[in-house]
Image 1 (spheres, rainbow, N blue to C red):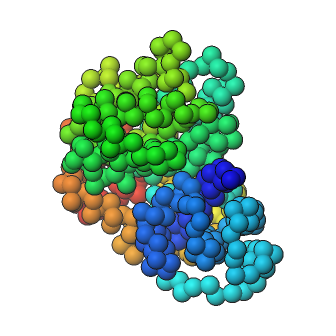
Image 2 (cartoon, helix red, strand yellow):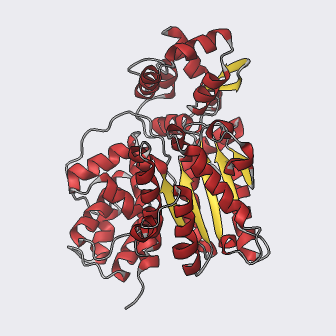
Image 3 (cartoon, one colour):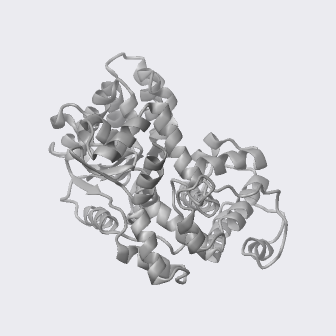
Length: 458
């Protein structure tokens, strides 16, 4: 029987781009789109997330067709996306309700068909950008990580990489990771993409976390779940995980494996975080052993929190070895380039005003230019109502405020903005949330938009 795993993995990656594109165009969180998909097509968010890794064997063709139509229309996907998805569907033997050419015309808007009821768009700024169109601004960090991955694939003398991608919330970490998920297989490497936000419910139970971590990797690699055998021989949990890798994963690899962990710092909520991150550092160190199978393993970790807040002993941290990349807000030149790609809907004078307000905040800048380009608002109205509750960023600002209230940091933020200083722990939390920058002794707002909104309400 033909091995369809590569095709199903590629299908999953293209599908994930489609869902992300819908969230970007709607200005809503990816999770909101997954809930909408559940209501429309009766597939749970947990299931659709697994589809991002690879399409399951023998999926319901009717469901696949509905998802393709949904993403194509609501995500404004280019014809290249629709064509490739139909090519993959054909190779996988899926049979749809109409011919390939006819369905392609429907997906690319050449035939007007009402596919399903769509609720009114909401204005909530998303945390994930659209990577499937031509609006992605490549930064130096993009080029560095791609260069390092390419070099390691060409030289057998280079042991596996460990790369940490640092950046506060909405800095573009998840978007970069989705681009890497498309690029890494082109180097002949396998990839396991883990997003720890989907393991949040296990953080209070160490046994559940380590089991799910191992099962997730096994499922991605399509190997039998060995956790029952491993758990039958009790030992400390990191050792069980190491045994899983050394006995069931590394010996079966036909090509180097890249494990990518997005939102790795969610583990800061767990009492066992030091043990887990020390284990990852051990994986990194094990590559130095002669003829070590660990040389075939590469790690990419994305975090918003400062590493020293995650691991107490820096000698046991995986975040201070290998390549460490810190994502930054857009420069004015990058904002100008993004505006150009949208056919320059904002004049140079107003673009300077927008940059002064947002300070190059990648996602807010993208949303602002997109809203003006799509005639959802004018740049004059956007700038005038930027800090208003019913303005273009109102839902985003209220969301941040609600999070700060629930975690007890709202007063700390207001005080830090007023006095320009705060405690180190508070500074780490607020900077990780993407609200401030600078130093604990010299606090600066990430952008004037945040300062105006939160100080006006203090």
